[in-house]
Amino acid sequence: MFLVDSHCHLDGLDYENLHQDVSDVLAKAAARDVKFMLAVATTLPGYQTMVQLIGDRPNVAFSCGVHPLNQEQPYDFSELRQLAADERVVAMGETGLDYYYQQETKAQQQASFREHIRIGRDLKKPVIVHTRDAREDTLAILREEQVEGCGGVLHCFTEDRETAEKLLDMGFYISFSGIVTFRNAETIREAARYVPLDRILLETDSPYLAPVPYRGKENQPAYTRDVAEYMAVLKGVSIEQLAETTTENFSRLFHVPLSRLTD
Ligand SMILES: [Zn+2]
Ligand SMILES: [Zn+2]
Image (tube, rainbow, N blue to C red; front, top):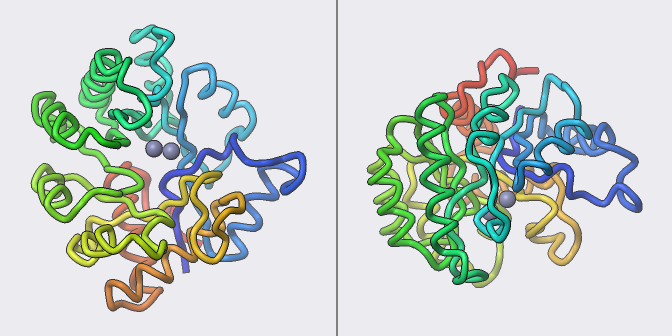
């Protein structure tokens, strides 16, 4: 079996106490069949140190971008474009809008989000979108910037079924994290039952949001397995079927050859 963690912050894990190094994290993941991961950036300097920390590995790809909650300091759009052009980078982001934690930077968040989509279209790299308390603006910007030109994924999905429907209409993929296992997440489970299997991705968003039964502990890519097992039951398919389809979805969206995603 081959599972992919489509969204983790590998540079944010606790290497002092919980893991020896990145290889240790990848070994723990592989022991549970999680054999490839997408390491997601949240700032441009952070992207550069993350690439240094992880290095060139056959089973890790990178995204490049500036998170909506990191917009207090302006950054250079041309630097984003230049860094994102690296062949190890398979996606733009994470980008998007977060009005829950930050209202003051709305304008900067929107400008940054638009720029990620424009660069994504130019470079043919899909966008990884984060949204919180900003549903309407997120959908409007995706439409206005013609995101179909690069495609994308709504990561760590916490919206409702109607929103999933609108995103699917735009050709989007929907990524489910450990939140889907939380007791009070019935709205998300309803959306997860609705989204067709060939549009679903799995993620941990490590080190945040560990799934049941690890809630409150640090999350890690290995726990993609727990999200997958839960989703398989929800979708009424075998874990093998879910693994195979979500890996194919990952390959299709991010243009990572399937030959890189097999044992
Ligand atoms: Zn996010
Ligand atoms: Zn994230």
